[in-house]
Image (cartoon, rainbow, N blue to C red; front, top):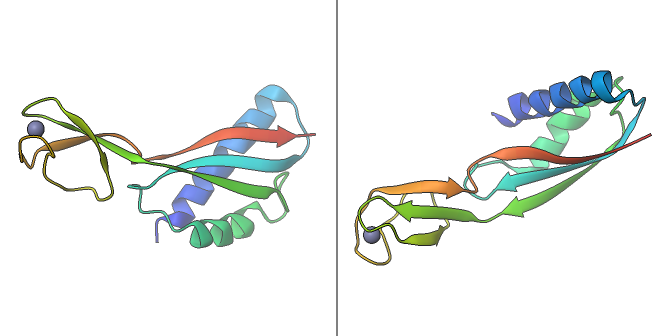
Amino acid sequence: MHELSLAESVMQIIQESATTQHFRRVTRITLEVGELAAVEADALRFCFDAVSNGTIAEGAALHITPISGLGRCNACGATMSMRERYGLCEQCGDPHLEIIAGDRMQVKELTVE
Ligand SMILES: [Zn+2]
C-alpha cells in the first residue's frame, strides 16, 4: 500500500513549508492526483488521518483533484489521453507511449492559519 508513503511525503512537505513560512496550523490541503498514479483516494485519506494525528495538520480537510492521464507516442509524436499506464497509439498503433501527465501526485495548495 503506497498510500502510506504518499501520505508521509505530504506530511513532510507540510512540515517543511511550516518551517519556512511560519504557519501554525493547516486547515485544508489540495492535492493533485494523476489518474495513472494508482492512488486510492479513500486509502490516502485514511493514511493521512493517521500520519497527521498530533501534528499541525491534524483534522485538515484533504481535497483531491484528479488529473487526467496524458501520453505521447515515441514513434509519431501524437499526444492522447490515457486511462491506463500502457496502451497503443491512437494514430499509428505503436505501443511505446510516454506518460507526460497524470502519473504523479503533488501538493497544490495549503490553506493555513
Ligand atoms: Zn504514434
